[in-house]
Length: 314
Length: 309
Image 1: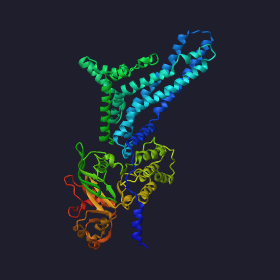
Image 2 (image 1 turned 90 degrees about the horizontal axis):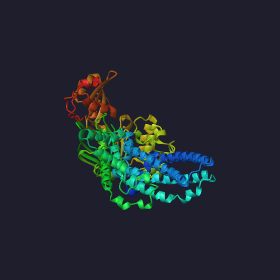
Image 3 (image 1 turned 30 degrees about the vertical axis):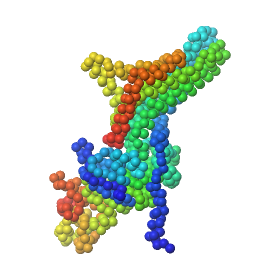
Image 4 (image 1 turned 90 degrees about the vertical axis):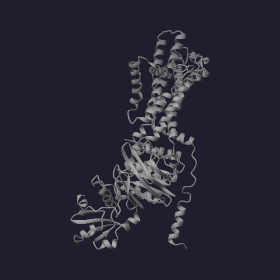
C-alpha cells in the first residue's frame, strides 16, 4: 500500500518517463524541405501566377489561331516558311512572356521574403522553431534561384504542349499544313534550349540580383522596393554628374541585359541549333563566378541581419 | 543545474539602458512571473534568454549560451510572444505539419488532441480565427512540444476572460511538471498570482524584488492599521502606505506578523499591491533618489506616498 505522497511521486515519475529523452533527430535537409513548403504556403503567387498567365496566353493563341483559320479559309495563301515563322513566333512568345512574368514574381518574392514576417511579427513564431537562420535564408534564396526557374520550365513545357495540340486542332482541315507543325517542330529541342537558358541565365546569372533583393528585404523595415531600386538609380545619376562616367550603369546593364557568354540570349532560344549550347564557355565567362561570389556575400549579410536585428519590430 | 542563470546581464540600445546588471537564478520546475512596467526591460530580458539578441554579462540557459548556441537551445525552449504572432496566411493543419516537420520534440497526436477540444477547424486560416482561438492554437502547438523551458511574453494580451482563464488552466493541468520551467510576463498580475511559484519585479533594467511565493506569504503583510497605531506602524518601516475609503493600509516586508497583529487586521498582500508598493515607490520618487531594492533594510518610509496614490 502506498501513501498518498508516495503515490504522487510515482505518478510524477511516470508522467514524464521519457520527458527530455534524446530528441528524435531532424536533419537539416528536412528542416530545409519544410522551410521551402512554408514559402509556397505563404507565397502562393509563386505557382498561381505562372499558371494563370499560361491560361491567358492559351486563350489569346486560341483566338489568334481561329482568326488564322478564317484567313486561310478566305483563300489567303501564306507560304510554308511564313506559316512556320508565325507558329514559331507563338511558341517563343509564350516562353518569353512566362519567363518575364516569373522574373517579376521572383523579384517581388525576394523583396518581401525577409520582411513580411518581421512586419506581422510572426518572425517570433518562426524563430521559436529549431530552424537555423542559415537554413531559413537558404530556403528563401532557393525559391527565386532554383524553384522559380523550375516552375517556369514546367509551366512553359505544359503550355507549349497544349498550344501545339490547340493549333493542330484548330487548323486541321483548313489547308494549313498541320503535319508541318509536328515535323518541323522539335519541341524536345526547344525545351532543352529553354532549360539551358533558365539554368544559365535565370538561375546562375541572375543569382546576385536575388541575393541583393533578399539582403534589402532583411535590412529594410518597410518600403523594400524603394530601398532596392532608388540607391542604384542615385548611384548612376551621381556618377554621371560627378565623373561623367557610366561604369555603374554598364555594370547593371551587363547583369540584366547582356547575359554571360555562352548563356544564350532568350530571343535566340528557338532559332539556335544545339551547337549553340556551350556550357564550357559559359562556365568560364566573365562575371559568372564574380556574380556567384557576390551572391554568397549578400546571403551571408542577410543571415547576419536576420540574426542581429531579426525581431526588432519598431 | 539552474534552468536560467544570469550574472551582471546588461543590454543597451544606444544610450537607453534596457538591462542594467541583472542577476538571476531560476531553478527547474518553477513558474516564474516577471513583472514590470512597459519599458522596464522584461522583453529585452526574454529576448536575451531566447538568444534573440546579443548582450553583455554572463547568461546560461539550460547550460547553453543562448546567443552562440541558439540553434541547440531552440529544441528545448518554447516561446509564445503574444497572441498575434502566428501569420494570418497559415492554415491550422499547415501549422501542425510544419512544427511536426522541424521540431524533434513535437508530439503530433498530442497537439491534435488539444485542438480537438476546441472549435478550431484544421482547414481554417489563422486570419479567420478569433484572437482567443489563435492563442488556443499556439498553446496546443507549444504544449505538444516536450520542452524544458517555456517562455510566455504577455501570452493573454487582448484575450477575453474566458480564454485567459482556460489558457493558464491548460498550462497547469496538461503541461507543467517538475521538470519544466515556465517564465511568464504579463500585465494581468492578478490572474497569474495563484499559479506562480516565484515572482520577480523588474524596474528600469534592474531586478527590484525576487521572492518565492511561499516566502511571500510569510514575509509580506498588508495591515489595516487602526488610527491610534499610525505612528507605531510607521516606525516599523512600511514599504508602502495608502488610504482607501478612510482606512489606512500599510505594507510591510520582513516584519513579524505577530508584531503587526497588534496594529490591526493582517493579510497577505496581493501581487498587484505589492508591485505598486515596490515599483511605485521608485517610479514616482524624486529622480535624484537612487533605485532601491525593496527590502526592510533599505525602504525608506514616505508617508506622503500612499495618499498620492
